[in-house]
Structure formats: structure tokens, C-alpha cells
Length: 173
Image 1 (cartoon, rainbow, N blue to C red):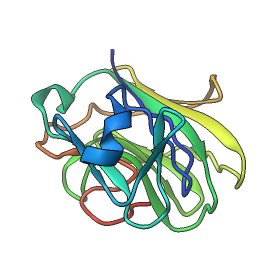
Image 2: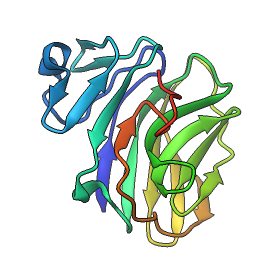
Image 3: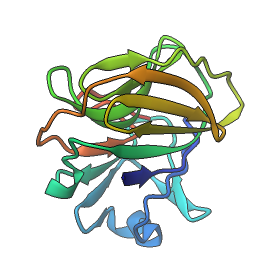
Image 4: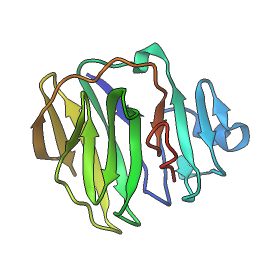
């Protein structure tokens, strides 16, 4: 299983992507990872201030996943309205994989969009993790299986993987 593990709190967003984040504050680019917005590296992560901030991990072929995948992170929502991109290798017609908040529910993607029916509360930390096992998207909330949804595999595409944004529109932090 390929894994992407990011850790962040929305609108006061901390991201841990496994790269040397201490240098991102100065350089804004490390390898193929580009950080957009005025970000402040703290606590071994990134602080997103709610205005145009996101991380573009790029479109390396290793991120074009069409089989089993696991991804997730820590989230704390300041608001639960509208559309908030969390992890995305998706646009309106090319659905790879991802997770977002839409109209107070957490959605996950593989071959299409799936409502998990999980409704987070504001000012509460959640560890949200998705595992696609070849036939199902499984949403785990704080380590416990919350919902299993029959699903197809993520669709091959050449989109960038972005954290903190629903690609390519600007639903960023």
C-alpha cells in the first residue's frame, strides 16, 4: 500500500510531508515540492494562515496511483461550511484520489466522489485516514473504522498532488 501522511489543522494548518520543512520557509521549494502563500515553519510543520496557502507536491509518476492507497492526516476545522480541499489529486473530470470537506461532510475520491457521511465539529482534532484496498474506500476516524464504501480504483492522470487545496480551483487555506 502506498501511503501519503500529512498532518495539519485547517486555517492554522500544520503540515508534515516527510521533507525538510525547515528550509521551506526560506526557499519555498524543496525538490519538486512547492509551497504557496506566506507560510511559517513551526513545530516541524507548516502554518497556513487561511489565505491562499497550499503545498504542491508535483506530478511525479510515483504519485499517479491507480491501485491500493492509504493517505490522511490530523485535521482541526475552524469552519465546516463550503468546500475545503484537504489532499487532492483530483479535478472535475480527472479523479485520482483525495479527501475534502464539502457542505459539512467529508468526501473521498477514487473513481468518483463518495460522501462518507462523517460530519466533523469545529475546534476538535480528528485523525482522518483513507484506505483504498482495491474494492472499498475505508474512512478511519481517530483510528476506528467509520465507514466502508464500495468504490473503483483511482483513475490515472497527470495532475499535481496538492495538500490544502482542491486542485485546480483555489479552495485553499
